[in-house]
Every structure is written in C-alpha cells, then in structure tokens.
Image (cartoon, rainbow, N blue to C red; front, side, top):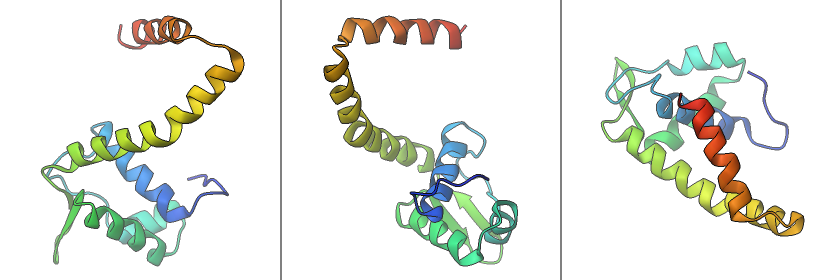
Length: 123
C-alpha cells in the first residue's frame, strides 16, 4: 500500500478497512484479516496495525472473538457509513464550498456534473 506522508499510517489503515466495509468486500459478521496479515501485506509494524484495530473496536465497527479473530459487527457497515458521511460533511464539503465560491461555480454547475457522473457510473 502506498501511504500518504502527511497522514498517520494507522489512520490510513482505518480508512482502508472502512473502504472495504463500505464497498461490501467485508460484510457484517464476516471475519476480516488478522493483525499479522494486515501488518505483512501493508508492510507496517504490527503495533501500527493494532492501533487501527483498536480505533475500529472503540467505534464498534469490528470486534474480536478471542482465539478466532476479528469480525465486522452487525452494525459495522452502518457505523462506517455514518462516520464517513459525517467526516465528509464536516471536512470536505466546507473546502468544496470555499473552492466553489472562489471559482464562482454554482450549485447548478455541480448538479450537472453530478448527474453526468451518476448516469455514467450507474448504467
């Protein structure tokens, strides 16, 4: 995995997990890769991977069955969706609005591009 320099690696691992859950690769109550598997595949220290698992456990996205492994909670996909939606609306949307204002882009302009994107990607 190629990591972004200005963001902690454990946060990027959390994002990787969230992306897999949102895309349906990892479903509710399904086993996910172990700490060791993630550490090896991403070439990170196992302690870094554990930090990501801990964050997701604290947010009740994943849980550990002792001796069996980690699993997505039954509400994990909903919690991830809510978490990522809130993050998007509070961090990225204000930046989008600022850029729209600077470039004098209207909501109608954005809607045209959004409608085009939906038509091309949901066909």
